[in-house]
Image (cartoon, rainbow, N blue to C red):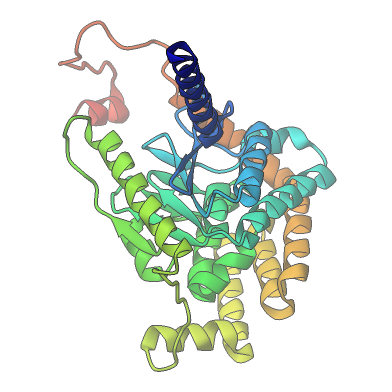
Length: 374
């Protein structure tokens, strides 16, 4: 009898171990570029491209991204999600420029835009709240992914920057950025971001309404400051995601006529005469600075105008079509070539010097040599 009891207890113990291991395996899922860990109903989706200092939206990453988020959408044990990078210095630096350059034809470039739009739209349509936890560079396609999330938390640090630099490659934001940015921050600020490609720091992004919450960076502790801050950002974002799912935190982005920022948003972004004035002034500035020789800024204005006047469906179609046209242009190809050249020049082929450099000598003559030496 005692042996029988021991056998039953042994089997129960073994079954419990199997169940625990099964639950643990179900709570984590790893891919080459993206992995997921479920923490009390909150899915923490971490992006970490191997052998790279930055994360970029490559075809392989987007494929894994879609698979991971399919689980988030379908798993009844997941109530919300946090999207974060495992790299402290980079959320997502943008789309893979090599992928765009290799696409070749305007049709294939437009298809890349359409695929990106669909992926980000799926995030936005998810009934479960998704929080973007941003530390480091959040640029181009990375910003568009963050815009598709329902809430954005960013580290208040000079290295955390948000921007839409596609214009510098002769392109326009092709993942829905031309449609979502104006609605979120207003027409003047969104056009300024897209037409200049300037970087926006986290504190300014908060004032603009580009991010919803700021997190202060931490100093050194058991780990270095950057990993400490990234871990803290994740903890805060998980709690935000949980509060959104439990309805403890509600997002109100409505603009009221009674406040000056709200009044300016309403006039410039939601009234016909205000929109026309903003587009007119923006076009005048573009023509003055570029003489109409760069097609990207003018196409950005055209596409944004379609979205503002005709709505999302036509706006997204105009965006992907415009993205394809620009991607196949000679101007864009030249700017991409310049980008590749600059990137190549930044690489250090000589490795770390064996000794610290304490003195530098300059050999030369004439104005340049004397000037550099001085």
